[in-house]
Image (cartoon, rainbow, N blue to C red; front, side, top):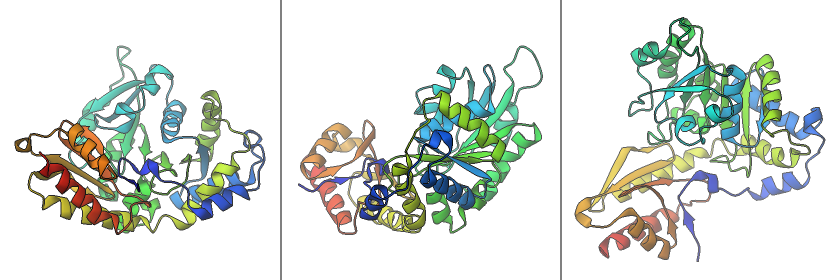
Length: 347
């Protein structure tokens, strides 16, 4: 059976060209800074994002953790959205490993943070308080439906942090999706932040890795933190080679994933008992809710979909997230819609 796997774009497999590049990659010891393929990837990433330097990191979670521990010391405080990936899905690493205190404020439905909430979260100088050191933003915003946040909105959120002397980090795991969605250079969406992490292993289709970008001084300090966290790899150019292909060939085609998400949302919205959720579709994500009148849980529906070759991510009792990516094809969209119709009719 051919599987159509919509659970996440992390499920993408490397393309044939990536596999060839990995097999033929020039290698060296990256801890010594001598892997030419990693060095090239880091330079490419920094140039695309308009930053001085980049650092290849095994995962986005480690990238965000490395950034926080580079910007902050033990007992410092980080302000972030209560729907942010760093708060919800990174195992509490900034607290467990860095002694950094999270201060959450509400994310709005469009993924943004209210300016007054940011201002009010910034601590005054008082030895009773943990010092406010960092603001973390996210774009695209996963938990808020995959929405891409405009440059203007980013600038507005950054301003109060700047005024108070805070640094700003962007979890840009899918920042290239945001840039393609808005039709702007990715550098325009990250120019206002001090550091940014993006994933190579989601829509860009590489098998492993993220890149953390920032100033030369920041990246030099981050390199030490990466080593402390166990992320100092050796001949890892075999992985970076796929990342180079990703940046060269896989960015513009993200628009195809966005088109598939729109087509999927349109088809599903026509099915009685399905409601689009979280403003879907946004970029490559579609969130839906199955009406309670159908008396079917997400678990039961997912099991029926599995029998029809479709895997969908469960996000609540009657809620699903579906993520379109390189391996979801034009011809798969009507198959997915038909599978949902069949699964719900059985109820």
